Amino acid sequence: MSHPDVAIADLNQAVEAMLWPQLDDAHLTYEVIAPIIERLKQEPGIRAETLGHSYLGTPIQRLSVGQGPVVVLAWTQMHGDEPTATAAVLDWLRLLLTQPPASLPRDWQQQLTLHVIPMLNPDGAAQSTRQNAQGIDINRDALAQQSPEGRLLWQQVQALQPTVAFNLHDQNPYYAVGDTDTPATIAFLAPAYHPKKHVDGARLQAKQLIALMKDKLSYWLPQGIARYDDSYSQRSFGDAIAGTGASTILIESGAHRDDPHRQVARRLNVIGLQLAIEALLNGTHEQYSLADYYGIPANTADGFCDIKLCNVTIDDGQHSAYQADICLVKAASTQSLLIDFVGDARTVHGFRDYDAQKLGLANLCALPRLGGDGQTLLKSLGLHSTNCNR
Ligand SMILES: [Zn+2]
Image (cartoon, rainbow, N blue to C red):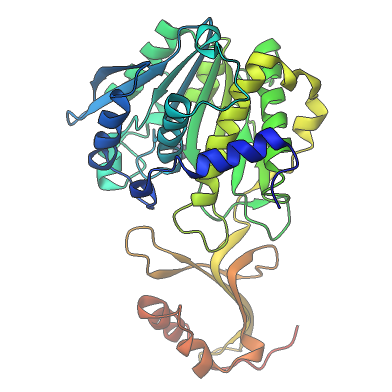
């Protein structure tokens, strides 16, 4: 069954044909995207500019389309280990340049200018780290501006004065939607520009655009879209840029069950971004209210772990036996399982759940996902009794 809105169903079909297959990966580096940028540069209508270089000298490029008064700026991978939207913006540019959706006005390039900075932090991408090569979290460098990447982004905001700014990230896989057992595959935020969280016209527009994207994307993710906490963070770029009068929109790509490369979030980023610029040109977002925005359920941290063992009895033979749940998460670097939490984990959901009460310890250790370190860790906990009731 396809999306009930025919234009969105068509858009979805068009996007499928635009996905760069080499970007279906959990890690993306500059070497992987550079040939794609070169191919996009061959398309008529695109303008490319090297804005500067990362701390270690890798080019940071900007790709631009259109010359209209509505200015949209999008940047990705400010955190080097958050590549999902980098793939999405390169898919999106391919779509706009080679097969612009019929739902866009024919003269859209006279109405809108789109600037995209794919991969703001190539050094972090190379090392698969959040930080840049200085060890600086660029998203806490909006005021101090000690990173070349942060300075470059701020210069772009000053020079371009975007109408709408898309700050595109990945969030850790353990966010849930509200208190449900659904992972937050997409989380949105219109960041505050003041500790009192005022809503000016620009922030209202950001919230309306988010409400529209949430509404339309809910067809594919009826439970999986959340709203990120809007506590003011003066060091962060989204909040600082919201203070310039740009309608600033954070999109966090998150986990989806059995989707390790976040291809669900990738597709929904492309569609959401496209729907947002179409709305900017036809005003359809104005029918959404603040209540629609605040009706999006909260993005809940620590809602998930990779493996949850519940009802485990721990008995080391020297102390009284006790019961606990054990949450295991995969180490980002090695993918080995680490114990994240021991105790009452009733509010945490496992991507895989096992009830120790129903499994003997021998079975627990034999679980296919509990190889290597995870198995050793379980043994070190002295898991040898599952005779518990709760
Ligand atoms: Zn991030």
